[in-house]
Length: 62
Image 1 (cartoon, helix red, strand yellow):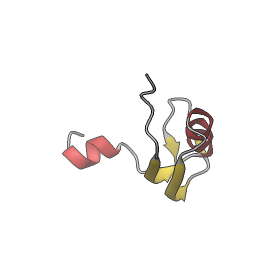
Image 2 (cartoon, rainbow, N blue to C red):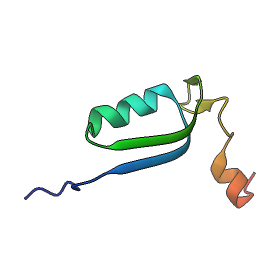
Image 3 (tube, rainbow, N blue to C red):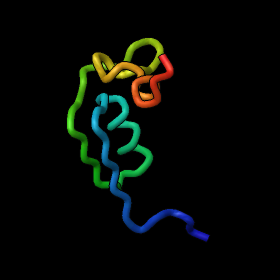
Image 4 (spheres, helix red, strand yellow):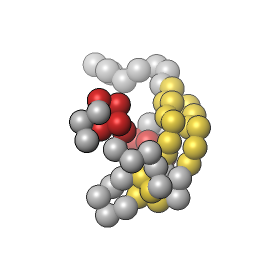
């Protein structure tokens, strides 16, 4: 059984080129929309400069 969606739309606030490429490689039929493309990922895989830790900011855990 084919469990893949017929249409896929990906929306992100901030992306890195590596992430956009990875999504495109996995889902070439997907429509991608991002508000901002930052330069790179750091050694921990976080977008630089990015938003910082969005989870900590959202839930005030830091």
